[in-house]
Image 1: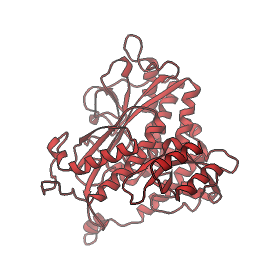
Image 2 (image 1 turned 180 degrees about the vertical axis):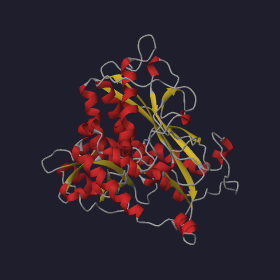
Image 3 (image 1 turned 30 degrees about the vertical axis):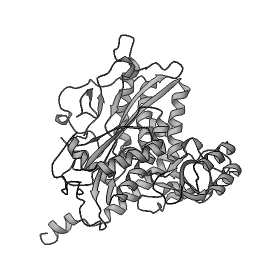
Image 4 (image 1 turned 90 degrees about the vertical axis):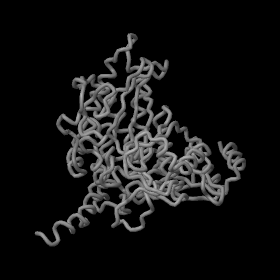
Amino acid sequence: MAVNLASWLAEHNIDEVECIVPDINGVQRGKVLPAKKFLSSVRDKSLRIPGSVFICTIDGHYPEDIADIWDKDPDKTLIADLDTICVAPGFKSPTAFVIADALHGDGTPVEIAPRAILKKVLSLYEAKGWKPIIAPEVEFYLVSQNVDPDFPLVPPTGSSGRAETASQPYGLEAMNEYEAIIDHIYDDCELMGLDIDTMIHEMGAAQLEVNFIHGDPLQLADSVFLFKRVVRNVARQHGVYATFMANPMAGQPGSAMHIHQSVVDAATGKNLFANANGRDSALFRSYVAGLTRYMPQIAPLWAPNVNSFRRMRPDSAAPINVQWGVDNRSCGFRVPVSDRSNRRVENRLPGADSNPYLAIAASLVCGYVGMVDRMVPPKPIEGSAYNRARTLPRTLEAALDRFSSCKPVRNLLGEEFFDIYYAVKDHELFNYQSVVSSWEREHLLLRV
């Protein structure tokens, strides 16, 4: 492999390599190495990184009480997954990206690493002779550059010289306002080998959505992970920001990461979600049952931030409960109209701000538990799910209250991972609640 790697680096004239690890929030961390040093580190397995990289909070801290859960200080060995290596666009010096897995000193995987969590879930399917297939859809906003976080975000000026002020879902002329940015994103994705499909204008002002072609969950999690980096870099080169916050602007719809998912027979490729007559299979219904039962209990894995819950409001194009139905976009779980070979369910719960590895793992593990336990789903609904009771948590605090007690998922993903994830999110919540907001200053300062 080292000879092939050396040839690849030489062929693309690579000077530097970014060896990237996804942390618990999906933030890209790692090391930058000269190409020759990277080659030798792959050969010698000599690249190290502190274990604390996996428990860093979104605001750059570490939970104070985590030492009792996990020893964060010993270095871990980084093993580059050479299937992920690609040319990194936008650098002055020819650079490559490669995603790495982390190992303990004894050669076992770091269990709390998000990529390892997803691999663990995929191994459960493999043991059953099943193979999950997914297709993510990721939404994001373009916004004017904002260097002062005290000021609200606003849509950027388009090519017409004006900023969007009204909803333009699927608007082609609205997309043309950002044609240069969109073309640049497609070019960079092609250079990197990211297999993206269509891009559309979503409901929000300067809100876009990209669809990924269906395939292997790990490969697509890698693609979404790198895609966010690409989009942010391209946007900055054009003088704007791109954000994957769940709800970056008041009065605008939120940004989701919808996950279409099906399960096929690993040996034959047959879709297990439909019977020979084209009707929903028992496995399909049990999969949906697992989603409806357990996804609300592990919401922090797909709604990981305090901002995540601003997205989930009635009539906001985001779900407030876990109803399911055929071609019903008000539901948390939508079953698109499809033939037997394409039978699938769309999980509309995760936000664009979620760690793609953990959000995909969460969705797949809930469906897995449903299938293994032969669970029975509630009846599908017709009409608006917004007329039904809210069953999703309203805040991160409420979501964390449910999180640790979800024993079936906790047992499969690991006690250690659950405890550490809770500690990280609880620390972030405490820091957020320590900040006095502009709303409080405006409405309480001189009135209470």
